[in-house]
Image (cartoon, rainbow, N blue to C red; front, side, top):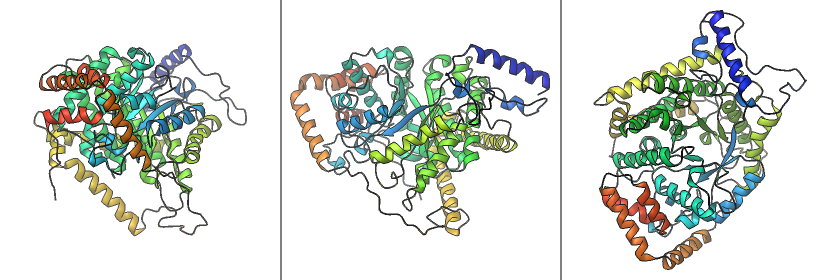
Length: 555
């Protein structure tokens, strides 16, 4: 790009920057030097067409002309344990300490669409997240937290739609107009088959539910994001950075194709898609990954799928620091790892961020560890001055080369996925890749290669295979009492006894009829939730129609 074109871009950026709202701050270094909102090349730069200015296609440098001068990322700490009341107390602590949004962790029975008193839930209730059995649990979870004002993310995919309906009903019972709700539901079923394995049905009925949710949200809750396409679990399963990026964006393209197949306007539904990435320990690789992700998504949405507006081309993403990088050995080192990973996410332009606690490798975080994790973000935000300049590493030879390299690797993977399909679509390729176990084998190979290097000492982890001497003492960890499960089951039985059973049965029967038909299922599911049908009852009703999915054995 020649100097005249670059200067014309700078003028466009300046006009957008001048019009935008900005935070009140000096925007100076610690020593008092004033800094510009963004920096670019002093003259001609052949790379700049791919780099660009913040807030302008291809959005490599961020979605907004102001960067974090307009709005800093949302501090959204992932939390959930025990019952709804216990988790509600943790949420109020997070919000009171400066958190900007909530992110719900559910226990394993909830993630698998089972009630707490299901025999398969024994010993798991409240242990890796909060137990949610009905709309009344959701009411307790957000008691005293105004859902019309607080954005809420819910990390669940298999039974995501009935959980969403419980959230909507809890908001109704608070008196909040449903159209005011804002937040994110994960709902990403593709990554469950690829990495996390928390599905209920075969892919097709799950995709139907997701399509129904996309239609409902586009019409009724325009600010709400019904899909958070997740690369986090893919990376935690052992993928490389390029695989995480490529598999995640491919899944996103699949959901775009789903929306288009429903006749939805891409410029209306695409802004409701968001992403969830891992921030791993390789600092510059992660920054490059995030920058490449924005560029790839914008290009594909515009050139392949026909999105016309900037918002429809934007890749918005939440980041969580890498749980898999945490070590049980010398766990206080995890504070340092988390800070480095969080800084990479910020320099990569994340829109919201969760920082892992130092003890999460051992158990759910204690309140003290959760506070340290929260303060890690606040130190980065308030003290380091990295929020002053948009994409401060833009133009770095190393970062730009890494960005280009990861982008090229991702594009090669996209081509492989599309070639696997029967019709050239991304969806067809993804479904074939799931059926054949291709994604899992690719991740397994990457994980094996890393483990081999670790065991040979080619990769080093402090406290694990180097610098192992330590003066640490055992950590006090959070333990969830088995009394939580007994109390949850007692309350669940009392709720079933108190509800109008005929109304619950009728609502579940209507839900089954909706599942057997072709119409949108969300209204019928909302009615079942309002009648106090439980999560397990709703999911079992759908299992009766669609069956369950069992992963084929592979050797």
